[in-house]
Image 1 (cartoon, rainbow over the protein chains, first blue to last red):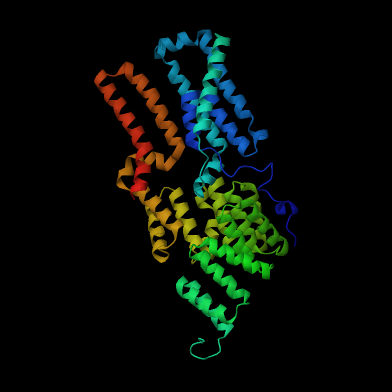
Image 2 (image 1 turned 120 degrees about the vertical axis):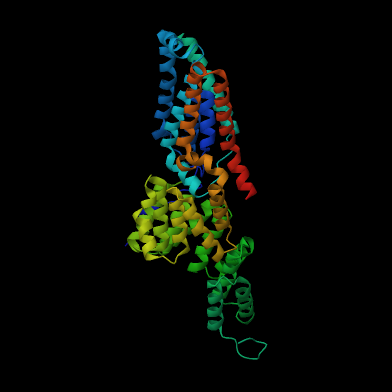
Length: 151
Length: 294
């Protein structure tokens, strides 16, 4: 009886090895809340890069872009009036946060087993401050950029 | 048996005594027994291995590593020493080096379920879930009731599936190895996953009574005590449903307060806003403070 050869190939310590931990769910949550879907995507894609999964996880970026651009497009084509009529003129911020948290729910589900793996084995995530702040800056910059283009 | 008494020391008897003491976790006595044996049989690889193992078990990893390296320079194929070396390297966070030791062990012992379980656990600790699953599967093919591989497979089920607490591997482990500490630990985790933290705490406390020097068990009991503390009752949804509940509470708060601002009297709206904010701050800060306090 032999062991499949690929099981006996080293997985750790190579230049293309995945990292042993990802940024915490808290980092993704806070970034999505303050920076919207694009900020959430920045954290999720940073995690995908750490896990060497960018080839399978890139759609998260496209979904985040669509979740930002779609509502903005609608907002500047009658949506703002509709929202103002039903929820008040300053409801945009609430919508932005709802979209951000909705995207975080998607990204969390996408990487759920890694988060659970880390929780079960008590693995420490890397510090999320720098990536979190950068993600919020990216999210807000993309939102303002898209708003300028679509308005 | 001792030299002082003038009797010839018997290597086999010393080894047997040390093993028996180790099983009972009497590390100080086991160390005395092994040291005495090493004075008479300094070349005994088994005694050297036991000395390193006692250092490892009594949380002296540096001494254990030193001893095991010396032993492996004399007996590079010593199975137990290589396994212990892999665990020590993992403990020292030298994970790629530990992996190479596991791979060498598996090349030399392709039917050892112990090696599949050990390597699989390292893969699980480094987020290589799919490889861990395949290693557990391969180990269980070699030895269908192996405790380490069943534990590994049960942990993978808990990570991958929402109903992982009902894992077939966990049930088999509890059935085949009810006496195994790892069966009890897996049960504690599964009960906690199902929301039965009090049941999990009772088992974990019982385990800690038998192994009062175990740091991982102490940490597990502390965490479960925090989760079952009366002051955590308002946070039940967050404990039970995790991030899903956190998202729902935030969204309900944001949208509900938005609607309430227009529909409710100002005093009621302000009160609700403060209650919601207080709940959010409580949920972020209190669990951390409580764990530190306990």
